[in-house]
Each structure stands twice: as C-alpha cells, then as structure tokens.
Amino acid sequence: MQKKLINIFLIIAAVAVALIMGRDFIVNKSGKNIENAYEYNIDEFRQVDSSLILYREVFSFPVQVEIPKGIALCENQIYIVAEDVFLKFDREGNLLFRKVLGASPTCIACGCNGEFLVGMRDHIRLFDGEGTLLSRWNSFGENTVITSVVVSGESVFVADAGGRVVYQCDKQGNVIRKIGEKNEEKDIPGYVIPSPYFDVAVDAEGFLWAANTGRHSFENYNADGSLRTSWKTSSVNIEGFSGCCNPAHFAVMDDNLFVTSEKGLVRIKIYDQHGQFKGVVAPPAAFDRGATIAPEVVVDGENRIIALDFERKSVRIFEQK
Image (cartoon, helix red, strand yellow):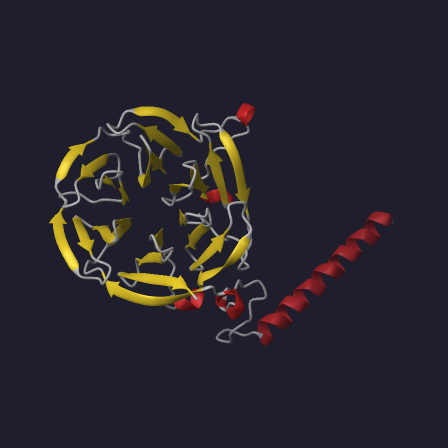
C-alpha cells in the first residue's frame, strides 16, 4: 500500500512539472527574449567614484606599429618593442630610431648601463641604446614563454610563463637559481599561470616581486630565493583583482607603491606594498568600450605612470592630480 501511494505521488509530481514547463514554453515562446537571471554583467563596475581617481591623463602619442609588445624607460627616453621592430621615442613622442629585430619579441627591460634586454619566446637578446645587437643568451628550453624581465644589481630576473618559474641569472645569462617553484616545506605555493601574463619587478630595496596571476597575489622573495612575504586581494570591486590572470602587469614606484594593470575589466590602480588599495590611475571608462587587454605600465623619475595601450596602439601618460 505504501509503495502504491509513493508511485501515485511521483506521477502527480511529474504531471505538475510537465504542466509548468509547458506553460513556460507557451509564455516564453520562440523568438521572445528571455531574461537570464544568471547573466554576469560587469557594466556596473566600469563606473568608479571620482574621489578614488588620483591621476589624470596629460599626454599620449601613437607608437606607429600594428602589434606593440612591450615598453621600457631609460634616461627619460621611451623604448618600445613590437612585432619585429625596436623603437625609441623622446618624451614628446618623437620617433628617434626604428630598428628591425629579425624576430618577434615579448618584452623589454632597461639594464644598468643603458643596455636593453629584449625577451624573445625562449631566450634573451641584449641591445645597446641605439638598437645594435650585442649578444644573445642560450634558450631556457623549448617550453619557455618569456613574459617579463627585470634587472637588479648583478642579477637579471626572467619570468617564464611556460615553465611557471622565475629564473635568476647573471649578466651573461647563466642561471643562478629558479625562484617560485612549489615547495610546501618552505611555504611557497607555486605559480598558477593560466595564460601568458606573468610579470616581475623589483622594489626600492632590490627585492624581487612576482605576480602570481592565477591566485590574484603578489609574492616577494629574498636574495636566496626564499619567500619573504606576499599579499592578495580577489574581488571584482575596485579594491581587488578579478577574472583570470590578474594583475596582468605591474610596476613598483620609488616609495614602494604598486601600480597594477588588469585585463578583462581593464583598469590601472595603486596599492601600497602590503596590498592596501590606495586609489585609481585609470578606471575602466578611460579605455575603449570593449577593451580587454591590460596596458603595460612603467614609472618615470617624476612618478608619472606611463602606459602602453595595446588596443589603441599608443603610449598614454598619467600624472597625479
């Protein structure tokens, strides 16, 4: 008897579900737009309280290339690498030279003696300040994807998104150690790099910082490669990082403030060295609607923030209000 009642109940429930589904089909018949209650809309996050915006754009100029790849500053000159070319501009945006590289670069960094380290997919090339090739390092391996290079004293740090590691090298390209590989005993979580966005920089004291983009975090390392400290903040709100692989780019100012650049919901922001949100350089509304690529950011001697806007193919300069 009990089994029979259960069967009757199940039949009634099935009929009720069928009636509800049929009603919904008739009401929301083909051709009628149905609101998706689960649709994720980021438009509301494009607007930022004006009191949080600490910078204003003061100048911009086109980089005169189709596919810009990276930016560096040296002695108030702006250096750009693009698909197969190396360019130098003055602060007013005048092109000073354009040299063919003969290969596709991924990033660029200024060395200590006016030399430039240009990252290719799997190796580094060294150029002088006039774009003349000086030397070429050996490959780091066939799976290497170099995304960032920074020089600190006698060390060169190379971020490899393919290997999910940072190489510490000497000036000749010899690997001294690998930094950031997962090591539970040393409390190193390991890099999570879902796409080729993996930036490194050094702070005012010369310590290495790396963006662990899949974790929305920054990791700070001692000279021996041990983890010194870290901070993270995950949120779609203006105070945090959201989506995949953010922050995509960053730079560290002389006072150890962090300038961060995000992809997806494109925005440039300022944090202190402990991860405390300080304000905004450029909100999403400062970029073209539909823009998704994070600008690369560098800081000049006057603490102006210089952004390479990959979608506008231009250099944009921001200064504090």
